[in-house]
Length: 390
Image (cartoon, rainbow, N blue to C red; front, side, top):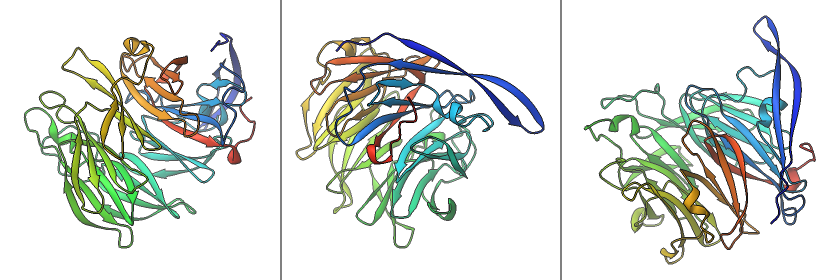
């Protein structure tokens, strides 16, 4: 597919209000054209991408790829919300759509930014200490929180919790204590499942990682069980059958990362995908997995797992050799209709990363420079879309 290499820089003079000072700051918004109209068919109008930014750099940013116009616009939150101090914040850890609102979990800024999904204009802010991931059920949002400060300590004492938030009022209505440093969160069949990592406690030779998934009853909002999985759990997602897939980061050195299957009826691990995994995405009955094999010169892994049989059916879904140019495969999503594959490369975690788009056959269509550490995706349905990014 032919890519138009046209980049337009739009300079917007914005008045920022910080305390009693009035400073004029020049904001830079970059728009790049790709393939106008090529992705406009179907139910989705565009794709949001949250860039994490390095901790302490206050560089979390939000990008938008417009399927209708072919515009790829970087750092749109800052442009749309010029009066918000420090812009989006420090470390964008998760991004989810609920109704017509976007929820961006900003970890080190201890907040969730709530935006209008059509315009990215700020609706509100929810303060959650050391927040990590978010999911929804009916009228509530559920957010994992490390609860304590950002601090590597083998004897870390503060357990984490799940916060319940009323999406109508954006108020925290309850908390449920789980394990140390809870990360991923998913909802299935009346329960909330939380991947406990214990990441702060695993430093050095201590190996005090958590290795369980907490099960919380939605009805009582109380932890009812723990499922033993593996050390340093990270991401967890529920499939269409209600079963859970959870990844382990392990100890980063002696044990490899792995993907585990939890039968939600048995409340137990019943299968393991013996591949390194850093992230994964669902599309129908296919699970697209990316990972880094540290034992083989940091080789990137791109595989497809049949979720019904739990067998690896494709061990190299990128088919044109592009995978050889990846430095650090990091984020992934698959278009629910076209099955186009979007993968991010975080590079060296310091400089801007890249977004790659592949067709369903694994052939590269284009690549685009993003913000720092591009990671989390949301598809924007057409019923919430207005042509506000043209």
